[in-house]
Image (cartoon, rainbow, N blue to C red):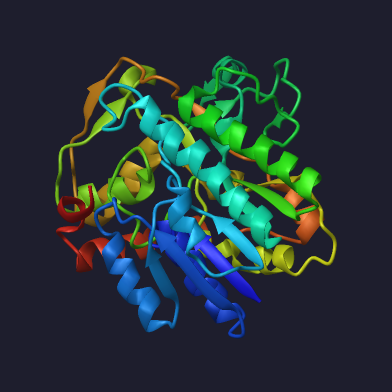
Length: 355
């Protein structure tokens, strides 16, 4: 079986490619990347050493994909991954965001149509509607926001997190909208052309080797910053760092991806959350306390004003993934943090190189 991974030299793409190689040595894995992110060339070397071929290609250009060999499945990991993408000060504009996340998806889906390939979209928790989540009643407990038990819960939200039943109605941010549109197109292509399609909505990804941007990998960025004493800020929600996210190592998706690509049924429309969940969640303040225990006292500035699209509490409920695939995250949060810390100690210039 031949597997094409787009964005293969990014953190998620490269981690999944190497994990799939470990699980299924008989898979022929190849991929494309446009190498616009600093650090991605380092992953190309690792992939080459594992016998995984990488082409320099840009999913925004249909002619780049036209020269690729046929694949049986495509795992689409190519995207602008920041919820702030396309906004002022983000380093990208709205057209660039849509070209990467929407036009790129269309080009990949056309490749799938041409070759009869299955399609797996790595989507995001940020497709979920912002206002109902921002309006949750929250308590503060042990330096973290926690949803109050006694409240009128929106459909699809509980103490376990946000499930697939929750609304994706706008506003979801420009980034979230680009992924919602990509999901819809993927499902329509699957139904129209009888292609197997899986939509995997992911929580915050983290692990060693993640590129050094706060808006793309807050756990890695924060630990690396504390390790080298870089200035840090608690932004928004009172500037206390109580906002909570869950954390997932992308290698934990390897086994479920093999299930999906080996599925004998063209199951178009299977949308599933995959995330660390409540057990693998913590606040930014809790993360900073962990860092100070490892690296010593490191003062943090406070910025009271909220950023656009930010949420005080965002955890995904992956109960459906457990029911559908028997899946649970395999790497506990302490192990992820320790892995990142070891990488930070071995690579003190990581943020300078990859930010």
